[in-house]
Length: 164
Ligand SMILES: [Zn+2]
Image 1 (spheres, rainbow, N blue to C red):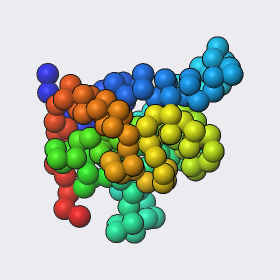
Image 2 (tube, protein in one colour):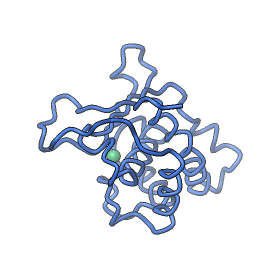
Image 3 (tube, rainbow, N blue to C red):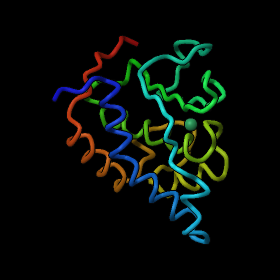
């Protein structure tokens, strides 16, 4: 079955979930039983491709995670992947790395900031400094292997990337 862009992103989220959950669990080893309770998987999510408003086009991030207060229902996280990056098949690994970064925001920081907690989980997952912007140069070989494996499983994202 051919996936739509949004289905592709949701499937990517599903495949990335064990990695993010694992990183969260080992970041807080003192409370293994409570980790899932402290940081439950955000279930109300909408994933799409787009520019985030109020950011000049040249400064648009690769991805964006809006906290639930941005949503009219007050409960749903919105994640956007850059329309220039999504669907660019040379950059599927970077798209997945970006989505994983946004997942940490949704899980850990309520959509905001790169605080210590965020950095702990990001490091555990395989990201290295700077934690604020995603780059494959600061992604561990182990995580890169996982992202490539997931990218192969997913196949191409159907989005047609926009010109920068
Ligand atoms: Zn971030």
